[in-house]
Image (cartoon, rainbow over all chains, first blue to last red):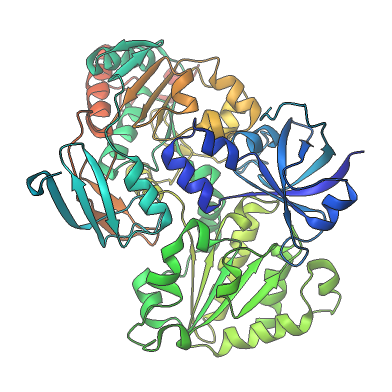
Length: 122
Length: 450
């Protein structure tokens, strides 16, 4: 069953170091396809660390892996993902005349995915 | 490795992020053209220096076929000269010298020039124009600031040495005890690696930064704020009143803000609210506000494009003179609308970072890339140049995030040309193909309309 949550895109140290190795490398793909999720939300959705979830917006979708965070660090209903090809799939092109597409606080549908589904950014 | 094959470069500059730390001590293996040690670098800087050795790549690829730089220049110039709506984008990871040439090409071809600022602190640039900016160098902040407020950012992971070199722990002229002389506040929607650094952490609800900032402005001006602010923002009135009192009584306050304000709903209104708060506080004490910038020379890009066109990003030359209009001539928009018919991308990877619709259009048009590494964009490019890495292989000028220009001290030579050299060659070839500017100076407006 899909649930609506708020996705924050941002930078991380691992993303930064993987970027230097190369955006086409496995390390960069790994670090940009992990979504951090509140532990209680994960338990409710029957997810464990490294479980696959589908994130979907009106624009697109991405299948990524979960990483658990405590409630004090990441409130319920909030998700974090390092910027990369997966997060780009979820952004809409409209900028409301500003030049900047919304890439933080995106409303996304979160849905657990069978383990045999392939992880991808689109 | 023998000693004669080892070189030490002191006071070298790291261009990974906008901190542009210029105190690197690099140990260079000259035989294998790589940096083996980068003293003083943070985790990001160490990766930057380690991973930018000379890779075996073709000088250029034209439709996937290996080519010389000269052949690439010929094809790139032809594409730009024949296009009716060419765009130039990127520029935040190259030198000011290369940026300058890129602007002159945009002028010559009557095209559009935009930098990664538009999808970074572009909204801040818009807020600067409407609200103004209370500025300071990072050196002033280090030496004077006793209250630092980080808003909507995670410097511990994105700008690690901002804490240790400028804003939290260093000892300064009027902050002789370093960390003990400063109060550090962090405002964010989640706890990050930066949170433990803060004395006070305000965990705001997503999308409520503007309301918090506006409430602080009201409190600073002595207006009444209702206690229901907590329900809307997650921050109690008591906490806001305490922060207001601290801001008003500090000696020198600094608001350093990230893309937590600019990449979310409200964008330039959020940034404008923060800049206005800093202005308000100057009635009581000295307060400054500055965006924390991402790429190594994104601030240089803003400066160079401003010097040459009068506007910082999203500039269009199709009428023969520069016009500025975010939303119209910013790259994310015009690609999403399917408008450009050719693109030259310098040191950037929009095919990986932009929204889906924009990427789809980029795949439909001829693209030229200049990049030291293979990227998603270079893989879809008609012409993909391999260029030398700025700061590691090429000299030049970059701007630190506070607008201080810094000269680069390269570590070793690259067999590949610099961005500036490739762009200069393209410009000269375009000039020949067009016989000068596409739209000569003094052309009546009616003659340029299409």
